[in-house]
Image (cartoon, rainbow, N blue to C red; front, side, top):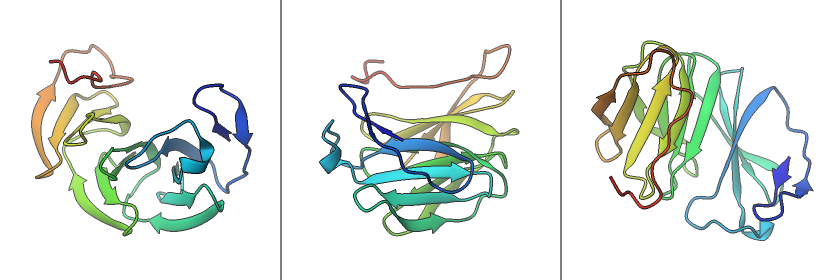
Length: 164
């Protein structure tokens, strides 16, 4: 189901196969106009990420490599797609090419949520019963580990203006 950004009106209901956790994004330009939306990614219990062309409703590519259910997805403004999985890894893809550029390892549990910084240079990942990790997208290295929650971090985000 695709929702208009400003009006919250259902624009199109497409029945895609499999149980899927959906993340919507448009690398580069974001607009409430559905004509400018071009890519939707879905993560599934079959361990894959599928990239769909919203205009044609056709699958563009299938991204494979996770060894567990895909639980979280996030697009960057630079066109990268991050996927988190029950296998404890985060994979960073170039979805238009169909290849992974990084496999980020270090979480001891499944990855719950992902967030790219506004400029796309940094990625945050939070895992079940684990810490939040901050990754440098130019190297694929973990640059910070944030601990302190008594239980799982359920979400993570960056400030819009990168104030801190």
